[in-house]
Every structure is written in structure tokens, then in C-alpha cells.
Amino acid sequence: MISAIETVPLQSFDGPLAAELFLVARILFGGVLAFTGVNHFLDLEGMAGYAEMKGIPAPTASVALSGVVLVAGGLGVILGVFPALAAGALAVFLLVATPTMHDFWAVPEDQQQSEMTSFLKNVGLLGASLTLVALGALEWPYAVGLGLF
Image (cartoon, rainbow, N blue to C red; front, side, top):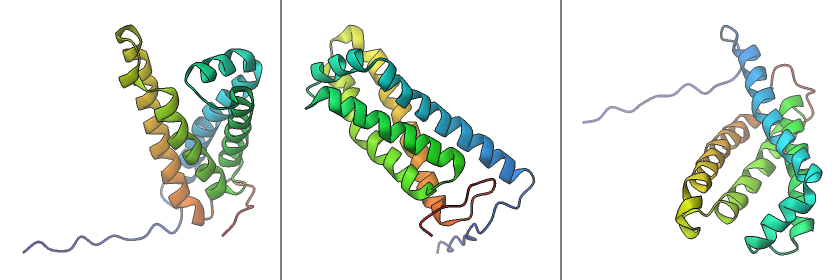
């Protein structure tokens, strides 16, 4: 008979350097996504053209809206402001954008590797954002402290 695996629920970040490492992780994760969002505005025309080529409706508005989600979500994660909502918004963005913008299975062979790399990068970011959603109910160290829970 297989014995049950018992888990201890995480209740705080009290391990050695856990709070500091979690802050560094938030800065790296949120910073990359916020920076990507800023790039949506710096190259709005180019990104809108790419979105249009991928069949995205209202490409300019879609790129601008996704830029807002990325900047707000990234900063929310970094600062710990509504962290579950911020991470959830990033997860929804990644869930939608990944298969629509990086459809490596539907592009010419010479583009497949680049699109697959972007697809897999986004899948990893989606996993990280879902982890942060799961941790959203905890009190985040070094956070502004505004949240839903």
C-alpha cells in the first residue's frame, strides 16, 4: 500500500534568506514583464503590425492593452500591490498570448525554432505567475501590503 504524502502548508517566508530571495525573484520576474510591457509602447507600431499578421483583432489597441497589463502586473508583483491579482493578470495574458503569438507549429520552418523558444519561455513565465497566484494569500515580505486577502 502506498502511504500518504503529507505536506506542511507554507505559512511564512521564515527560512534563511527566504524573504530576500523571494524579493529578488519578484524583482526579476516582474521587472522582465514590466520592461516587456514598456516595449509594447516604445514599438507600438511594429508590434501592432506583428499582431495584425498573427490575426489579432484591433492590433494597436490589443498591443497597448497588453502593455498596460504587463507593466501593471509586473510592478504589482515587484511591489507586492494586489499580488494575486497582478500575478493572475500576467497569467491570463501569458495563457492567451503564448499560443496566439508564438504558434511555432503554424509558421514556416525557418521561423519555428525562434517561435518555439518564445513559446517555451512564456510557458515557464506562466508557471511562475501561477506560483505567485498560489502564494498571493500569504503576506509577502518587503511588500507594500495592499491585497485582496
